[in-house]
Length: 98
Image 1: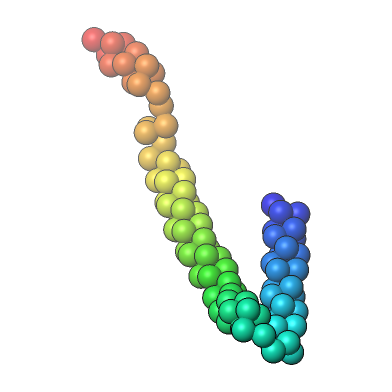
Image 2 (image 1 turned 120 degrees about the vertical axis):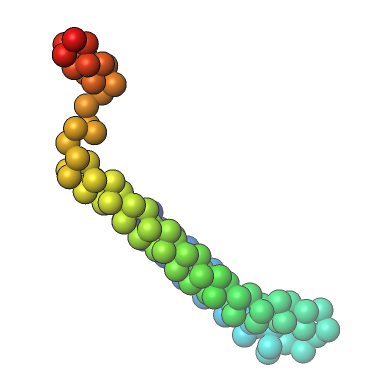
């Protein structure tokens, strides 16, 4: 998991640096065609980091909630050990009492 995060982080850095370089090159050159690329690059330079932050924030919230639910289920199983038996074992217990 750490290796995947590291690769994604490096890819993000490369993407942002290339966007900043494109923005700089387009700002230096004075051409109507490069003005559109400049505006798109400035927009992407702001929007992409914000979206990445939002995605990571939502992922952490979802993961935290899933971990809490898993912990609650584990706590419930520890408090109620009779619930851990299989239905077959429960059926055998019911027939033994007759």
